[in-house]
Length: 204
Image: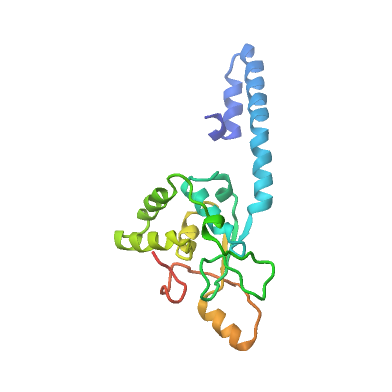
């Protein structure tokens, strides 16, 4: 496709094109530009809204996973650059709110918050088989049934195509912070693929 060719090569092609084809080539490029403008405008809009995502809104993880596995528009996953992951103590799913943070949404009804789409469970199962052994897939599908999404955080780290930064607050940090009376904070993750499940590390 022309879009995959470097500009210098396109200029060389133009130099070797018959004069009577120059206008056609110029009009073709102009047509490409016009056709792509709505898509580029949509990318700008989505990038503005989605470049920094946070699990503080419970729909974030759900919608990003749907985007990654093809159940939702992949443009959302493509434009995520930073992802903030919060640990919510013993509350499940991940999106449940802590009482002291009024900006977080609270989930009380799974089916209202996350109604199943046609074929969604099968898509999750196929997706998980790419990353986990069968025994873990079965375990995680049981968690998907109750919309417990914590294990998908690590999968998102590996599958969001243009993710540059992820910040994470784990269980240990949460408990020590509460004892000290500290407000919730995020810390950077240098190697999210390390550690145990209990420590909030990799589940792969």
